Image (cartoon, rainbow, N blue to C red; front, side, top):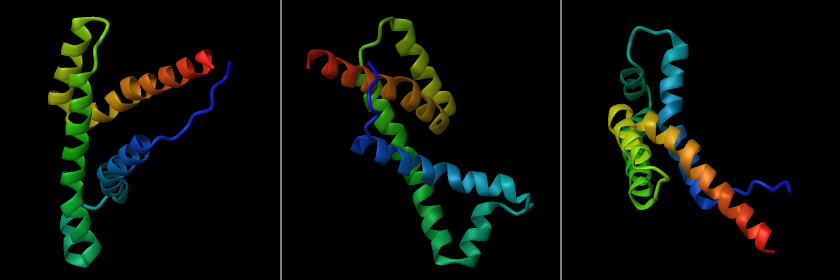
Length: 119
């Protein structure tokens, strides 16, 4: 049975936090300028200062959110939990993003399928 993908509030928050981290990096890499993105943003606009302020905060919030989810979730094997712990601490926000899409979204899809089976 096909299930409809529903957006939860956690999906929206996660997407916004990822946008706050990845969009400035993407702009920097696509611009090809030698100066750093954050120096250009801070010198040119108030929005740039706002992005500089929120970028690290959003990445840390997202990282702690995924770390909390990791700590409360039970994994099939102990090795998986250890592996995700190592990924979190070695890759920071990139690992958190991978965890969100691999583990959290999979968990949400399983819950929605279980609800449909019970109905």
